[in-house]
Length: 523
Figure 1 (cartoon, helix red, strand yellow):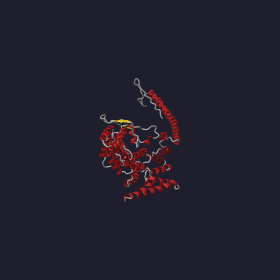
Figure 2 (cartoon, one colour):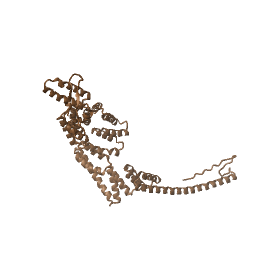
Figure 3 (cartoon, helix red, strand yellow):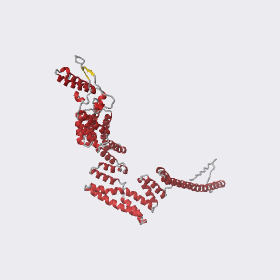
Figure 4 (cartoon, one colour):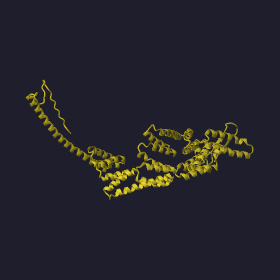
């Protein structure tokens, strides 16, 4: 720190300073010498002050540096890496020629996983102190992990030149040789399409060089060639961070996820590509395709949640048109259409579509469940039981499948006794108006007044009773629910222990006209 002194002498009334000589009066000469002496004294004073202030500042600065180093050490020991790094920054700024400070900051960077930031500090420490073996060894280790085997070898040899017995340097030098040999052999195996051998060779290379993106990319490509997409993705993902601006990796990941049917993850990866460059043509083109398909599929699922099955089917069919070349989307869309058709009670179409889906994927329990529900609506109970049983074998913990199997078994048992839907000749999804219409038609047909002989009348009476019972059961929501669950609400066995016994006393005149009144009790 310095203090600058300035003296400005003004001339008043024409007086001023002059150089000694014949033209300079004696008075002015004395004045000049006096001023010159004052200036000399002030200059000496400034030099003394500068020295004192610089010494004081140096002492203060050194104390601050030591304080930062001590705080950095404590915070590093406590695991507070970001705070420790801040103090080491200050220490480096305060003393940019201290090799040890750079080394300590590099240690913090490594603890934070920022090996790229650690390298310049290690190089600076080596520049300031070429025989600093710890820094050279650490740099060699980082270079090896990055796959920079030549520079790593130079560092390890330099360490051994100064310290021939250094065991770590010897071990790392052996690893350098092993990595180079295996890497070369892996490429040879890849070129002869021996992808399994290449993968095996690269395992050790990646173990020693985990920060080298090129070896991960090579192994990822090998996995792709043998159809192991998930493993290919696992190797490719780290390269997005190991390489700067790695848009190619993000796009490749997005396409792989898309091929696997994971459109949401595909969308996420291609967005990362566009964050790096929103004008990237390849990424933007792929983004538009994935976004369109993803919206259609998400919209279809939302419609299913709202029980709007017809609209959901339209969305799934649109999705198939959007992506006709990737089979997994067609397969999954057809499976969901099967579900929608079953839920919307389009039984014939549901059975057909679900059967096609089952042929594509025989181990999908949901398809079997949806087809079983359609079989129930179509009154094919044996087939329903069979599908639910297969579904249970595939997913034994699914409560809906367990309940469906139990229900279909009851319906099968019930169908072998008395089936109210069959009595009236209506489908299981018939509404109340359709039930009443069918009842009236059959009641008119089997009305006992229409028959003459006693035998015919007795047969008609039995039919008439069944028709009337079916109408009462299927128009009563509570009793119909029991029927759909596989129970017979009029079966005395089902009423035992229930606290009541269903009676059927009524006077029957279905058309409110004519002279016939048929009165009976049904037990």
